[in-house]
Image (cartoon, rainbow, N blue to C red; front, top):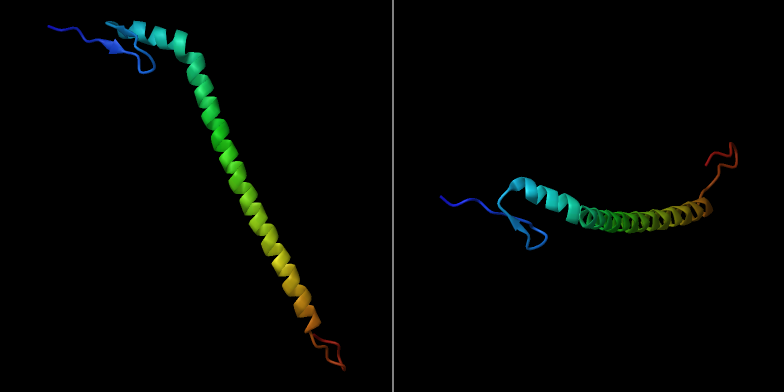
Length: 86
């Protein structure tokens, strides 16, 4: 009967007990794993910020176009000389 061997996914560490593998991962790799997770979160946040900036730029461009349309429309508005309705 073969005993199961537990291997660390982050390095070449092997052990016959699951507890030892957990202790190894918590002691050796916990800081590395946290740093990688934080870096991944920072990258995702940066990507979201870039997308938000792109959306803001698009919205600003749309606002400018709408303002231009309003200005053009105001130039073409006709008023009734009797009641001043547009």
